[in-house]
Image (tube, rainbow, N blue to C red; front, side):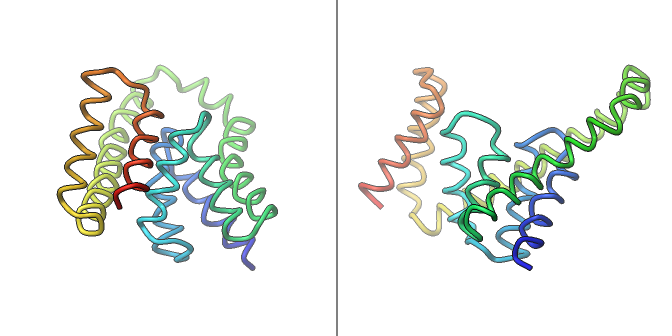
Length: 175
C-alpha cells in the first residue's frame, strides 16, 4: 500500500506540474506534507534546499530522497519512476500532436495563461517557507540569511549551491 501512495504522491505532480521540476515543487509539498504527512513543512524545505544544492533535475532528486525516507530503496525507485512516467508517456504518445499544434495561436495562448498560475504557486510556497522560518528560527536569523543570500547571489555573484551551503552551515552552527 505504501508503494501505491508513493506512486500517487509523485505521479500527480508529474502530471500537473506543467513547466518542469520547479513548477511541481508546490504540488509535491502538498502531497508529501499535507496529504500523506510523511514530513513537516520544515523538513520539506530542508529537502528542497539540499536538492537545489546538488546537480540534476530537482523533482527526481526530491522524489528519490523522499521515497527512500518513506520506504527504502524500492520506495525511491517507485518515487523516481512515478516522477518521470508522465513525461515519458507524454513524449511517447503526444509528441506528434504537440509538433502539429506548436506555433499555433491556441498553443501560445495556453502557454501564456499557465505561466501566471505557476508563478503564483511558487510565490505561495516561498511565502510558506518564509513564514515558517520566521516563526521557527526567529526574525533576526531569517533576515540575516535573507540579506546575506541576496548579497552573495546578486552583488558577489556566488554560485547558488555555495549560498545554500552557507545557509546550512549557518543553521548548523547558530540554530
